[in-house]
Image (cartoon, rainbow, N blue to C red; front, side, top):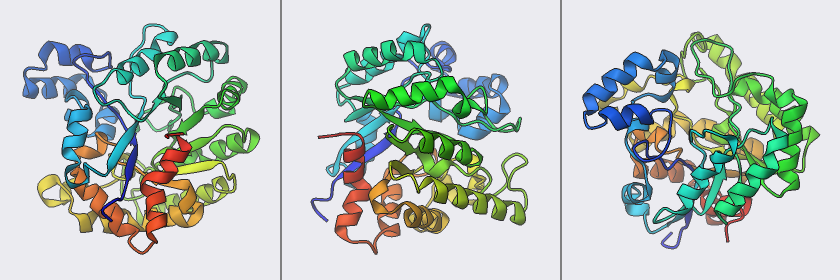
Length: 351
C-alpha cells in the first residue's frame, strides 16, 4: 500500500556520551577505544545483565532520530514517528527524571509521544514529577515504571522486589496516573501476569499497554535454569497463554507485539548464519506467537513495535517490518493499518 502509515510505539533514543546513563562514565572515559570499552564492560558488568542485553554496542553506541530514520530504509516515508519509552536515565533526585523528557523534546525530530519514568510506589512525589514531565513537553503521555523481576540469580532484575504490584503504595500511584489522564507501560516477565491481572482488575481506570508480549522467559530455549527441557518450555507456554487470556478479559489492556527476540526468551542466536536474521527466519520464529496474542487480544488492542535499539543487534529494520507484514498478510488492509499505526495513535493520543 503506497499510503500505508507506520507509528513505531516502542523505541529508546539513547546517547550515553551526552546524557546520564548507567554506562556513561565508562563511555566518556574510554569510548574512543571500542574494543577496550567492550572488554572493560565485560569485566565490570554482571553476567546476568550482559546475557540479557547481548552485545555491549546496544548501550554504548548513540541511537538518535537521524539513525532511526536512516535505517528505516524503504519504510522511511511511511514512518510518521515513534513513541520513546523511558530508558535508564540516571537522576540525582526523583524530580530530575523529567530531564529525559526535556532532552527528548529538544531533539531535531522528537518523538510523537514520550513515556517517561516515575516511581509509582512513591505516590507522595508522583504529582510533582508528573507536573515536571508535562512542563517539559506537550508530547508527554504516560509512565513506565519497570516491574520485571525474577528471583533467579541468572536473570537481570529491573525492579527491586517481586511484590511491587501488590503493595498499597504502588496501587495508589498507579490509580493516580489514570486519574491524571496518563497511561502506563507495563514491562513484566510472564510469571508476573497474575499480579498484573489483579492490578488491572482492581484499577480499571488507568489505560495500560503491556510491553513485549509479557516476555515469557525460556519459551524458545534455555536461559539460565529456565526452559532447559521441552517439557519446561511447554509449561512456560501454557502458563503464559493462560495469563494472557485472563489479562485480555480487561478491555482497557493493550499489547505490544514486540521484543520477542530478546535473549531472555532463550533464542540460540548464534546458530543463525551471519548474525542477522532473514525475513523467513523471523516469520517462522515469532509468527505463531504473534498470532496467539492476536487471537487472544484481537486486532483492535495490539500494535507492532521494533524495540530498537535492543532488537537492532540481531536484525535490520526492513527485515523486521517485512516479517511483520508477512505475518499479518492475511488480514484486511484496515486491520493491518490498525496494527501498524492507528492503535498506537489512539492509545498514545497522537493527533
